[in-house]
Length: 367
Image 1 (cartoon, rainbow, N blue to C red):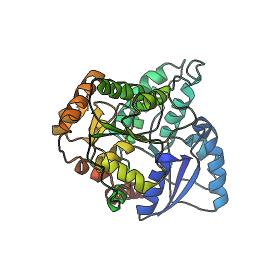
Image 2: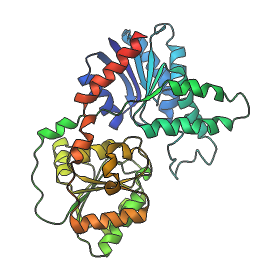
Image 3: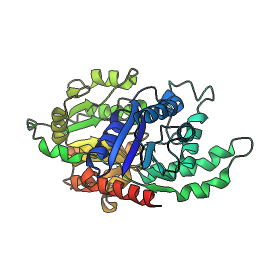
Image 4: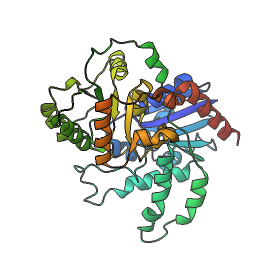
């Protein structure tokens, strides 16, 4: 089967997901994408450009899969002459109804923020099937829609929500986890536990809570090493600059690691993965570190509970910042419990997930 995969924001984890499935699928998948920047403009203008690119390519798919960053209704209107009646699915990496806005973004103050959520709504309506990468992503989207639509003056279309929910299902993110198996980096020299931050350097990953807690434990006399890696963009939250100065004697790595082997070796060396994110619809970087053996401390919210067996959630999850600090302090004092965290997340590898993706598309195409 020929599948056109449309990704207006082809960068970072979105690119890894698209190219990962392309490599592991038994279908012929052609990716049509735009650079992963200017996300608001991608949600507005991506449909126009990708419709043109697909038309000019001569590729005629049997099925179309796009992501939540596309205005699907606009795309289908533009592409109707050469995509008549083929099945269409959308994959939600995130949803704008549950995504926290940056305090530096002027749109909420200017009341320009609802449009992106509405595009997610119409995209889901236009699709034949709607996939979400986690139960949290699906439930936060469907749960927020009644109140969101209820705020409009009339013709709110809330009666369509029951039918929309029937089209929705969870299909976890596929990751190329087995590539970490091939890396055997140097062992970390003997010393205190290594704490790891391996997320984007942005406000929604909770850097204030992370560095506040780690800094307080340092002041209490706890010894540890700290690696702070991950992608950063033009605007970096000020917590990072303060932490680099305050925690400089603990730092063993600071900044983006471009080389995969070096990154994989660092994850394998990490002892503890303290996570303070305010938003995560799946948590690919968390899963990667867990697969490499880092003991996670995760918020008892968002997508994180899906990565931990029910019997172990009391050890791994926390509800408040005070509990997070208490559990991290215990890990530093006791070096963290030995748990099979790698086994918990190994099922997200593409060797397991690609057949599931292919099977869902086969089922959709057969209807």
